[in-house]
Length: 292
Ligand code: CAA
Image (cartoon, rainbow, N blue to C red; front, side):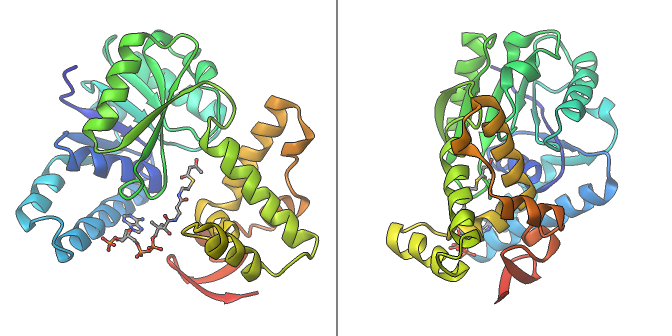
């Protein structure tokens, strides 16, 4: 497969991370976002990550420049027309995704592969909105993308073997470890992770332990790098709730019932790191300063 240009839809944390990984693997990559403020934040975030890699001796100053030279940021969708692969990492709203894919579908060549980084929406359903569902696939990266090794490769009902194999091999080229997953709500990662986080929130809700102790159990007892409540703040409580709702609806099983406390916190706008407060409060984007 000839991949001369990769396009990433969405300049948020996931989209930027994905674009950085492609550029670091030698691919010319364009990041698209409607909001110029998001593009600016993306440019700064990637530069900062690369600076840190240079400081740590993992990247030469010369390579840093080469990576940046492979990246462009745009709010003009027409700049994506020549792309060979489009990876979508925009907001988790079905309608918005459908609209964006429709525009991209009209713009790109019929051979372009379309990959969605959705964390839980059905790939088969998303693929139904484009003219060639056989070249639509799920490519689910983990946050923070430059650090986490895993990529779930999700085959939609119509995904062709050729597109699946090319995407699987591509993930390896990015120095990631791909796993193959059939299209099913939450795939593997969020089918397991989110009920664990939800259960941790139930423990807090029922007053079984403090949030610090709940996190400590999973950190020190199970060697997780972050406790589940810290991780929920890191992911975003709105995202956690959204995924639980998808699991609850698609499996119609009460075991996926979102914890009322999670729902209440989302209603209150306490979404975690991105809003400065969730289960913990944050002075900066990266530091928990106080338990409530
Ligand atoms: N971008 C790039 N690099 C980053 C980064 C970011 N956002 N955050 C941390 N890093 C790098 C740091 O530079 C550091 O690298 P060096 O050791 O070379 O300096 C390394 O990661 C470790 O960082 P820290 O020392 O600052 O902190 P840490 O050891 O606590 O690790 C962590 C941070 C990697 C995030 C770790 O806490 C962790 O693995 N947490 C769990 C993350 C996780 O579970 N992710 C999956 C979320 S679910 C998901 O993404 C799917 C979904 O659909 C919701």
